[in-house]
Image 1 (cartoon, rainbow, N blue to C red):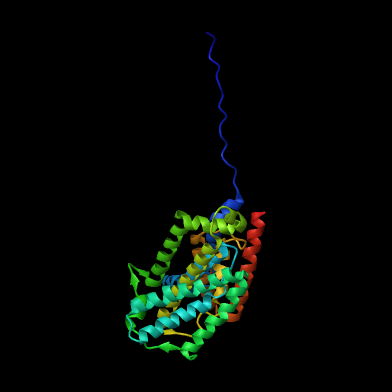
Image 2: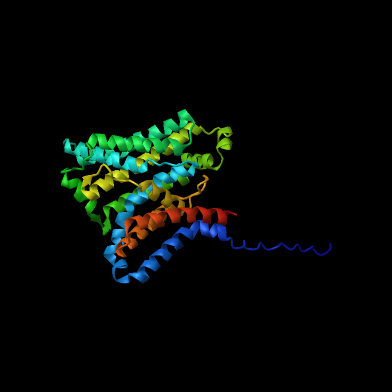
Length: 326
C-alpha cells in the first residue's frame, strides 16, 4: 500500500477587529468614562467625592427608569413623548392615595404599576386603533395626562403623606441607596425579558422589520400594546421614586423628562430606527445624563444651558449611530 496522503487542514484565522461591533458593546461606557474624567479634572475637589458619586447614582435612578421604558418604545421604531406626564400623574395618584389613608406600599403599587400601566395601555390602544405614528399619539396624551394631573391636584403640590414612604426611599441597604437598588431590580427584570423570553425576541423582530414580523405570524398590535404598557409602568415607577425623594407630589414634575428618556436610550446605543439596543447600555446612558446634570450644577451652569447640551447630545448620538452603522 502506498503512503497515506497527508491532508492539510487550513487554520482558522481569528476574526478581524470590527470597530462597529466594539463600539456597539462598549461605546457608551467609554463615553461615561470620558465625561467623568472631564468633570473630575475641572472640579475634582467636589465632583469626585464619594458623597457626590452616590448622589449621581441616586439622581440618575429616575432618568434610568424612564429611559428603560422609552427604550422599548424606540425599539419598535416608535417613541413615547408622554413619559414625563405619566411620571407626574402616577406620583400624584400615589400621594393622594396615601393621604386618603392607604398603606404606602399598596399606594405605590397602584400609583406606579397600575396607573402607569393603564396610561401606557391608553397610548398603545390609540396607536393601534388610529394607525397614527406614536409621535402624534403620545404628543397628544402628554397634554391630556398633564392636564389630568393639574385637575386632580388643583394645580397644587400634595404633601404630608406617610414619612415611612419617604424614609424608605431615603435609606440604603448594604451601603447602596434604595432608589438605586430599585432601578437595578427593574433593569434586571427587563434584561431578562429582552434576552431570555419569546416576548423580547418578538419585540426586537417587530422593531427590525414590521412587515416581516407580521408575515412571520407575530401579532403586531399586541406587542405594540405591550411595549407601551412597559413604558408606562417604568414611568409610573419613576413617579413613585420621584415623589418619595421630593417628599411631595408636584403637578409639574417630569416636565422635559421625555428629552432625558430619549437621550438615555439613544446615547445608550438604541437605534432610532428600531430593532437594536440593550437595556444595560440604556442604564449607562441614564448615568451619563445624570453625570452631566450633576457636573453642570457643580460648575453652576444655568439650567437652560443644560437643555442645550442635552439636545446636542441627542443629535450627536443619532448621527454617530448612523456613521458607525455605515
